[in-house]
Length: 418
Image (cartoon, one colour):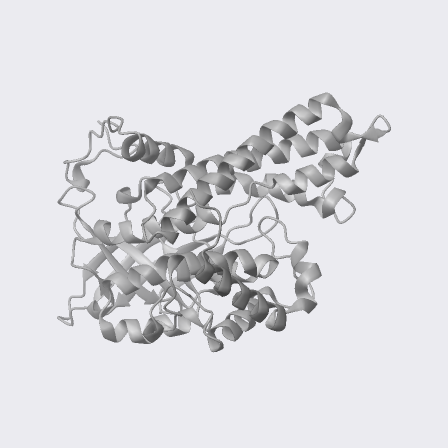
């Protein structure tokens, strides 16, 4: 691996740094530094409005979606230049989180599968932050088994060629603020579950769409349930062929794991700072041998995550495409985040059960612990990621899948057995 910028990359980094220094919303910097997991930290302004304003400023100057073609609102830059931008954006990158699903997952899927007419209509407003997207994948009955979904899409009986959607999605991040959604449905229950799926996109304000926020343990409501009751979608809003939904979804999932894993923090700098400031028996916590031992363990993991990420960046710099090994970053970061938060609260003792503005570091570790279980599920659960790493990175035999070639309608469900 080469950790140094090339002369061209160094020049680009300098240009990025100068523009951000001149244009970033510095009046929000202190608040953004207080961001916790599941919260932007912004109190003086609506977080969505602030995110849209920053994204629009970037778009107007040619810094939005750097790796996208210019005709779709991007900057036509290289993947490594996109990485450099993310490094230099720093704390202001928190604002960009509002668009991570749309720009990191839905956009690439639309770019790969939509007609040119739809690309030109949908992608520029997404790149500029004028519109927000969500992905409507997970369902209550199927969990991490995406291909087990039951939301139905059937042809309208009026001969229009439109599709009628009925069903439910759950854990949809940002659905309550989204303008568009990427929706995967079942169109044929008579074939194996992976073969009877079809992908669409739709306006979230379409008649028959109902969004219900889910109250989370940390008090936030970033996830949602979404219900579809006789929602009509034109066939022109289909991505890929009928029955090719699984193939289309792989485009989304590949980008999802890269987007989430590459930007996930395990929280080690926060823990280290706390251990330097907190006291145990009148001495800095870091002076305790047991604390130092745990810090060393977390530091090793943090270093591993850093250099695993560097490996991906190095591949991008050489024009290569990072592969399934990127699942390692999310798998390790998610579990480390949870363990680290629990250790920090143990250090706080009885004060760790209190979560308010007077808590150490404004309750950052409490927020981290409450949000961390979701990080181990979203974008692929720990079990799914281990399967990917085992099968596609290590070359181990795949899981036994007894329902692989069984028509979906014949797969037993709870309570259906005689």
